[in-house]
Length: 164
Image (cartoon, rainbow, N blue to C red; front, side):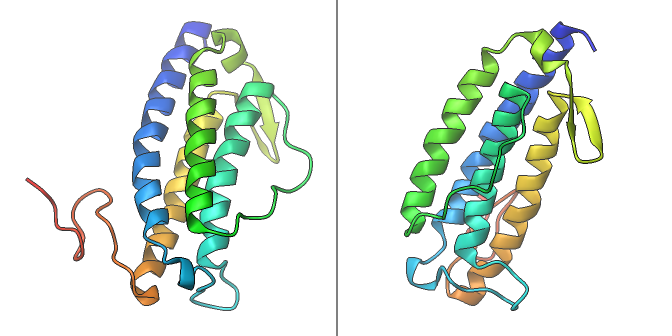
């Protein structure tokens, strides 16, 4: 992969992640603060834990691509409110996308290893997008049992019909 190809992929993946972030924020925003501890099963994360996992994992992937280093330790504890999770996510997601759009192409094409995966750095942005979409789908399935409404994601939902 050439540095130019790395930059093109980075732009595509950051554009996608910025688009997806708007939907992710809608899903997180739909978590009622008084029901954020809801979990559908004892093995499941709570809604608050899942929202925080989505937010912190995205930033971890961005930072991994930016620095070439996996983070040491676990993410900080989740903020006390859903609004604070949203604020943290929005600020950090925007910051990292801006930094990634300014990164040199040769840094995006260097191989990085994460567990058994060894890919050019930019490819971890695609993995990040897929990871977030997967967990956002989980979180959206929590909403109605918590008494909330499910926002439109890729089309309308029973609670937010598609607008034509």
